[in-house]
Image 1 (cartoon, rainbow, N blue to C red):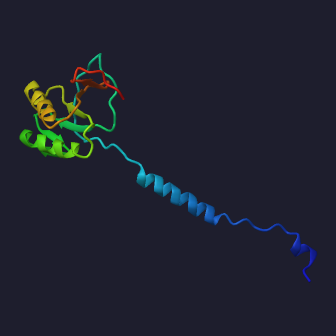
Image 2 (cartoon, rainbow, N blue to C red):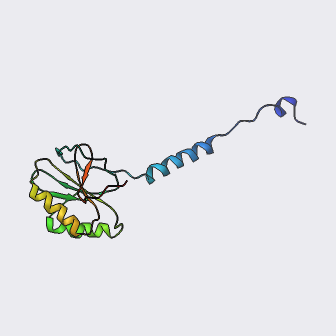
Image 3 (cartoon, rainbow, N blue to C red):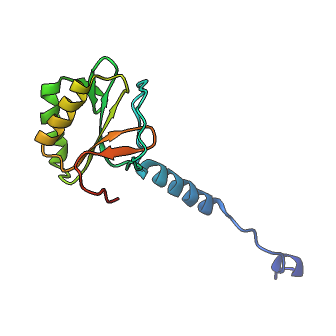
Length: 143
């Protein structure tokens, strides 16, 4: 027969499975979270008073001071940009494109990039400024 002392002692609570589940959930959320990684280019963007905030889900095209164009973190030629954007828009045709250009980028390069984006079938093309972006479609931007 058991003694009174062993019958009435509180049982230990094992929290090891709870800790395992918390760590598994932490890993799951860390892996499934999407991060927007900005390219590491030194760009001095122009400012605009009529700009609004940009969405993080836009396709991004970068133009540096020398006029080099970057898409998907790779330098591309202007004539290649249209096909690359068309391929990206095949998965989500309503996705907008954000052109991030240096303030000293020649206007000719900026216009060529915006033109290639429009020819690729982009519904909305915007140019990034310091405070946000300017829509080039002429329509109100809905986010």
